[in-house]
Image (cartoon, rainbow, N blue to C red):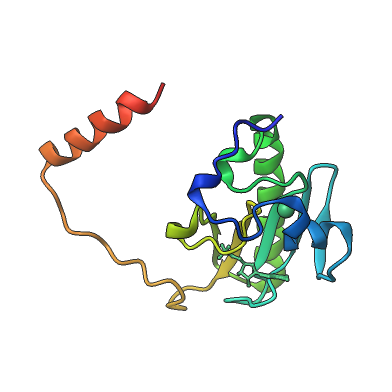
Length: 153
Ligand code: 5GP
Ligand code: ZN
């Protein structure tokens, strides 16, 4: 079973199964371009792809975000992610892919049913402008590490 819902990360938009567009896609109430389905996972092409083959991989069980995805699905998630990633590389001739999940509104999540974006990438495509941050002192990193370790129980 899912852990306590972490809906404080998002908004109420699509926050329950009844309103959720991805649940409706899984049920077939909204059409999609399905590329994969198993007992626990479903994958389909993004309606607004940032590159050819841009795929969304979602758990069939409604989970608001990553923190609600049952842990026991982790192994299958990795297997399916690898399987689709490999297929997309071969099918599109991409040089790589991003495997991204936007967790919470602040992180860019717009649909509140957990989903991984699998985005095929070509060398030099300039799609994602990964800005590097500013270098900080090791002491600053150590302070951040301490804060995280306190919560990493
Ligand atoms: P997010 O910003 O939540 O990480 O990404 C949501 C993604 O869902 C977007 O890339 C958007 O294009 C995609 N999306 C939203 N509605 C639909 C839909 O009805 N069908 C499909 N196939 N993709 C959708
Ligand atoms: Zn849903």
